[in-house]
Image 1: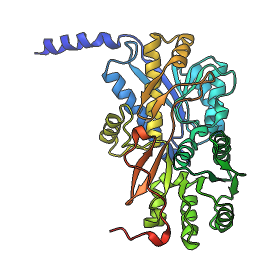
Image 2: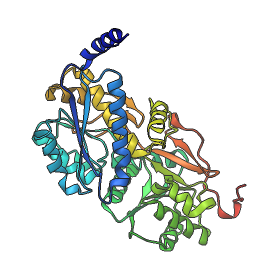
Image 3: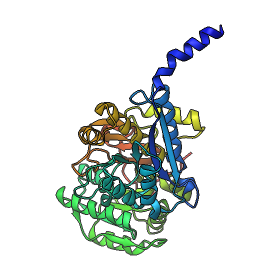
Length: 386
């Protein structure tokens, strides 16, 4: 019996006879962002387990080398240089957030090392001329696409674009304004509001005066909730209300039944019928006893894209791998992957979800929809939910 067991081990051993293949990344594992970034780390650990169970990559066991950036985005460049020179990482996955990804991307490019940008949504991460950095998540430029598409499909022409006064929200709104003009929609100047704003009465007054049909806002769940509170107070209801933060469970907690018919923008939904999502969500829940959030999906998608690139290239040669990722077109639980010459995503788009009877329903894109868009009902026409 013992001899049979040893024979079985010898048969299995050659699969990982070569040195481990090191995949490096840095992310907050301590500091103020550690809890928020935990899902990213968990998703990478899940992927490592899955790929090794299936035989590894290029016949080698995958070893994750995850450095703690201590929630300091400014140290990202230093951490990625460490991964390359000290830890001899064969492959790189980007850090947490656009600010850290900027520094990491510059280091990857300077060292001619391929990096999949998992969470850096800002356009600045993918500078003109970059050749080694590839984006897997939806870029900020795409966050207004769905709202504009459904506004046009509903025959709405006059839209109001609002943005929280921060770089991320402003970039989304600027891109949405450009796209609105291309679609023949009428959008004036972007309405910027201060962080922590509670009174949106001035914006409502201007919207009424201009005959606004679609109110589209980019910001946080708290912002969306304060908008709804103002709407109810002033008995105002645009024909379409889209707020980025309305996709977050916090929005419903803040306004409860008044959340009905609001449309939110979601980077990910565990119920979306994207490729492999059901299996990913189930495996993540089994391993971590929790449902995956958008950061988990972004981390997992980045790892799967990197894996497919390696398999397609058949080598760890960085030039061959760069060419493979540049040409790759595939699907992940996060959505489609196809990149521009700069490595920026050209296919993935966030979902639009509407709150219907207290639940999130996907309404766009149509291929993933679980329900049809419901009109944003006037306040006097609403009934209490049972």
